[in-house]
Image (cartoon, rainbow, N blue to C red; front, side):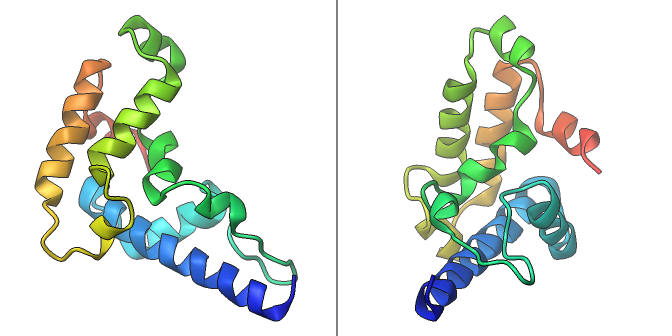
Length: 138
């Protein structure tokens, strides 16, 4: 990668990280540091010292896509409630982003209470709740 591509990749990472910080603060009550730790250890691999960073995998999907593992019940639980993993992922992304993708993270008037309600309704359809997710995470 040339330096321009590397700069673009780092800017992509920073944009997604800002989106995740907002979404995880609103959905789980996470502090920015917790989100940063998640992003570097359990989320999509971000830039690391001494390594070239390619953001194409990251930006191939929306920010909410990368959050789905945090909210997804087991495959058995999904199956027991008539869901497949791709169905759940798609509904979760819609619940968070309402088909508007990056714009929702830049909208100061976006109704995150409504988002929490939509996510909780989805989780309840598969025998879980937003509170269950909060309790299951560090």
